[in-house]
Length: 314
Length: 227
Image (cartoon, rainbow over the protein chains, first blue to last red):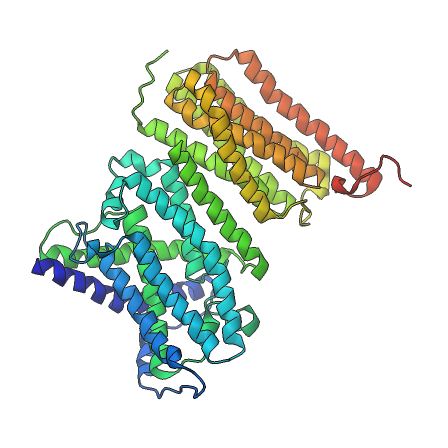
């Protein structure tokens, strides 16, 4: 019992510690692919460290929502981490507190507060980015629903620890069309949710083209650090749901000992690194879509998930 | 005939995967905006079709289907695009966006509806003859048939309309080889070369239209004579 609580907290520490590294590696690889000289892979850590030591400026006109939001954005991925398999194959202490849909809603809660705070300050770019994020968000929602309904229907459960076993036992299940289509739909979903290139440019600071970035413009000091850190943790959580539940549940700790769980950390990082390479290839070979093409991208993701559903149901 | 047990093996899973990707590439024909992209989607679809024929040949251990797979592989992904390129010319590679009657998002949703509909259409057929392979391939083939007809209706350009016809043909082929593995070889051969003739005739027609009117946007042609 005490073991499971410790491992659950260890998961949170792993997510907190390595999520800026993932962001740094993505940025570094992207710059390398585009034959530019990128910052070190530890730059996000330095950024967060720097921001924590700076003064915070909060507008007098803003309400409590503005001050509350960074904590919300920071805490929601941590709650989700308690529910999903990051390191172990067997359910941990908090695993049955909520299912995958619950995890999705908790993540959406953080996004909801970020949207509210962007509108709160009256900065002209904030509401614009917020409304665009909502547009992407509500179009991504049906994809999210259908992917998880399909997955849960196949597994007969919505708890991620149970779902992860279904697609790979026996191994020929891996090649089931609904599985492959669900994977494709979920990659498109991650790209849309994390603001990656065909949908949004994460490194772009051109006001009229920004979607995700403009929501955090008003934050400074500690607030900005928490927003950045929370954003990279959200990405880490989404990727580990994708890898550990839907694609490759291999490399997770089987045993109950601390050594086995610690060994799982480099393995999961390796898996995420492989995923990052795929993501960098996608990001470097596509152009950012125009705003009114984004619905087409998400409808394509929706169609893929619907195809996954109907090839399984019939 | 071998025993069609209902347990999924790696082979039937691979066949089902080919079917799923076939369906996805059929959606791709609708989703893509440019003529060349449309043709690429058709090439991918034809490659998947011949892969499916190969799996079926192995499954039913039938030499005829192996020959069908070879012909499909030779004719559809390589010969037809080559012929279209030769007959249609530079109109194929122009990077113009294709105009559509309905926008792409709506078209994709309608395509999803057509797919569900085709599953309902296939259901009574499957209750008559239902192997594990047919259950997967028949509805996907029928839905490709419907989606090809839809592309033919909605697009306003001659080349994508041709690709719509060829998609319909691919769908019929995909459903056909799964439902009747013992079809006479000559019928399969005729079907494959019919597609070739369609491509040539359409290509020449498109070329003539282009010479006369100066564009291949046939959706704009309402009257037979110029006023």
